[in-house]
Amino acid sequence: MERHASLEDLPADARIVATVGAFDGLHRGHVALIGRLAREARRRRAQAVVVTFEPHPAAVLRGEPPELLCDPSERDARLAALGVDHLVVEPFDAALAAQSAEAFVGRLGGGRELVALLMTATSAFGRGRGGTLASMRNLGAARGFDVVEVGQRRSGRAIVSSSRIREAVGAGRLSEAARLLGRPYAVTGTVVHGDGRGRGLGFPTANLAFDEPVCLPPNGIYAVRVSWGDDPMEPERHADGVASLGVRPTFGVGARVLEVFLLDTDEDLYGHRLRVVFIRRQRGERRYTSVDRLVVQMQRDVARARRLLAPSRA
Image 1 (tube, rainbow, N blue to C red):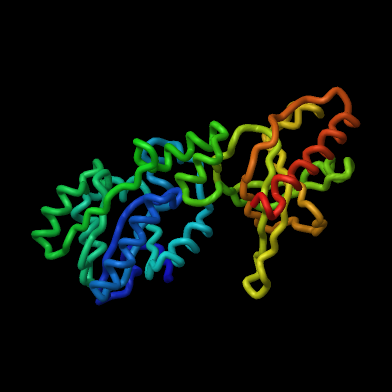
Image 2 (image 1 turned 90 degrees about the vertical axis):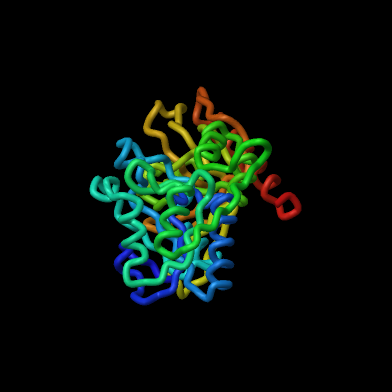
């Protein structure tokens, strides 16, 4: 898959089938749409193109970006695995927000043969979200491209959506979030130096920092699976672990931190990017009257995580 910084960077004279959207989370609904995109492209002997935006349009239009549900690098890898040939990450700013849907499609097809545009019933882009399914059908009839409607995925009675997944994660409903995503919920962050308190207690932890706000579950202790591997020439590493998410009230309330203790692994991971998969919430965050009591509880947390993460329960 080739990644491009603007529509104009797409190959000239290409024959393309495209879809446009934020694709935050890359949930089951998105996966169904992208899968259909890849099949349509192959059937029409064209190249599959996904157009998305950075930053998220809400950051410009409402002044507040939604919390990330999927790290951008993971999103890109998943899109490539689904058969996307070209990913355009268009810079979203006030000028782009003011651009009409017709002008946007003109840029998409400029110098290329736009064969088809895939949309759902609620898809919309361009100024005032004027690029709806109905308006694009009219435009396609005039300019010679098909508009293919893709049905929206449902879970229960409701449509699978990023906002629904954020609500589930924020409420701690990890099983529901996993069902809507089609995979267990995970976050990716960079290991940074902490205060070293965990190592002093016998539980050295990797403290994670995030480039952008990410969606996190409620404070507490979680059984997690962790992976890392920044060197493409080396195999990805994996470990089970126990994650603590919260303000560490036993030591006085501080900033909210996600820190992970890796089971049977003691490596210098500073600067590495870790992907943390939330498997099960073990308990809520508590304040202990002494450090000794906290250590005893941490030992129990580790023992329980080992049971939860044992292969027979994976």
